[in-house]
Image (cartoon, rainbow, N blue to C red; front, side, top):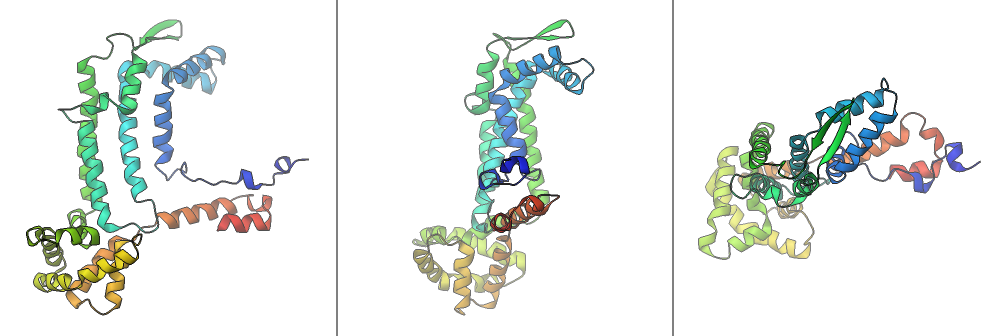
Length: 322
């Protein structure tokens, strides 16, 4: 009897990637992207299920409902949604770590909003020239004939995707962008303040402070943070100017270290005064995330849930918990 038949998990059978867990966005984005890439095959599979399975079966009923809903507009909209989901996935991957540099978080948000605006904007309409949407447009150039309960319908074909249809689908995505921005502002009340912690990005501060004319940006951010936290802006700026080169030197020694750790080192040398220390506390608090902890608990839950533990050897269980 093989190990698989006895229910014993071997090293090759163990779960190594949790990206498709329900709480992960991959469980939505990746299937959607693959559905767009294999759209014709999915429709053909649904037609076979509808024709060959018993009409009252769950599979046949679901396939018939799917085929009734399939249309050129629906297909094009799925392509747009896949492009949008891919951009959101890039944002999530930028914060999918135990220690996320808070000085980069605002930039990630700005970049994804900018990319979405360019993709689905009124001017360029780049979404129809690249990505999953372009792939779907190529698929829709060839008509797909569907048979449902003895009646026929066509999806795609020459001239089926009109400019009005493109505008209709793109307007839905523009509404999503508006909702996305409003959701960010609602979920992150200090969203504007997150932008100002970029002053503690050592590389950016170093470049901007090399010339007097370019030092206004970090100083303005420090003033905004000071006013938000109720501390003296002038003392914060003066203390920052006096110690930022220490953080820059530390960054040269440890180029891979996050900015939060660099400024903790500066603070440990008793160079940071009370006002700037209060601002640094706010900055470090923004750097705390639970992505790595979430993955650790997910692995532990998978290893211990139900009868999994009884099917594992002690060595395999210990390895899975690492």
